[in-house]
Length: 242
Image (cartoon, rainbow, N blue to C red; front, side):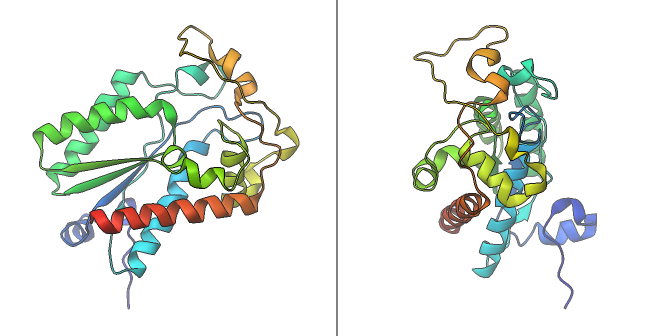
């Protein structure tokens, strides 16, 4: 039996035409290319949703539900971390318009549900704006999942803290690809502000060295547990929605 891959970029247009008529929805992983301390790769915010998407697709298939995984959106809105080399910041309005047009194309292709699996906090407001514009014009439902936020309670049972390039994110990347993590450079601290301050180079204050948490206690075992519980939670949500 020939198994057709469920990654959109691996399909021919004929395969895509056939598959889109039988799948229940589409997952769109979204992240950013930005500094994550001196110990994590710039692609952290994409690597995580890609791996979660893969696990969700497998879990749904085990329950008899097919879902397509779209190519990820790598670049996101990252004003705060733009002070560090390697951060590729897309302005909020530009990013929103870009995502909006992608969502519109999926709606035109006939997808009734698009699940945005987001891995980056700076994307949240533009993603909401893009989705709102699209659902007013097309018969499509957009589901926005921010994996580290929406399952904060579950993750807090595994990690002692959460934060940018912190224990949770570092654990997840250790589980996905430990060769990309430099644990000897995994240092940082949690910093908070009572109100949001917007100023140039604010990242130097609240993200020293590109970190806002202590990643020292991160382990691959914790990362595997996070990936499993988050992917299971998302699967259960999508079973209900699809």
